[in-house]
Length: 358
Image (cartoon, rainbow, N blue to C red):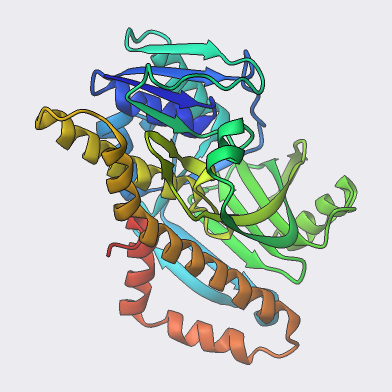
């Protein structure tokens, strides 16, 4: 059995590692010899997905910084907590993108079932030599040819990421502040480093000094020593209408892209990998071929959940976008009151950890 994955980003390598663990031959096709990663980008991974990662993909314990709590604030309530989510063992963990990528790549390059090949730009090739072809590359011609129908929503905002270095503290509580400019997250990655993700509305012309000033104004926890390079990306949400064409399957950010305010983008992809690998293992166990029926089943099992989850994140974004424009604290206090209900709080934590299970 042989699978081709187009693109060599983090999703592609994570999926490739999952497949080679099942003794499936995988070719990863890349348009670049070397993948460049921003040193300031981090990922939040839920406890449930970490367990799956460690058991079925690769052990990443040494890369993780575990967080026990997330505290949420809003400008309308000054420094009063809006919401509080907690798990005394582990709520979720943060990992640096480039470190996770490096660990998986190093392991794959030693695996006899894995090959990385250079794909000439814009070259279409025959997919008959592969049982399945999985496209993770938004800019590959297959995307335009087979996956052009999508629902896109522009947020009219940019995400700015950096890492701050600060004096050592017990750093296991994440902070999210819904500011007038947009959601700002402080995500600890060590006792003296914290990742920043600041999504700012109408900010195309913001300069580095403006971003640094905003971060410093909203920081009430850290004694900052240094702010690293600031990277910027335009934000939008995306949901693909059709997940596959015959034996070609769209995957990762090509399937769905959401606002980073909840840190759920890569978690959605890991949940997709769980579903896909379960389908493939069942086919292998039954002695059945890997063909378009794999893609058909994957779409039927994941598409509705992904759309509902993405829509939910969009609704959260819309709510807080509206809340930031109001000059009274009625909405904020209503959310604060609801958040004190332990049953609802546990439901939100469970959804963030495991996704929506229909």
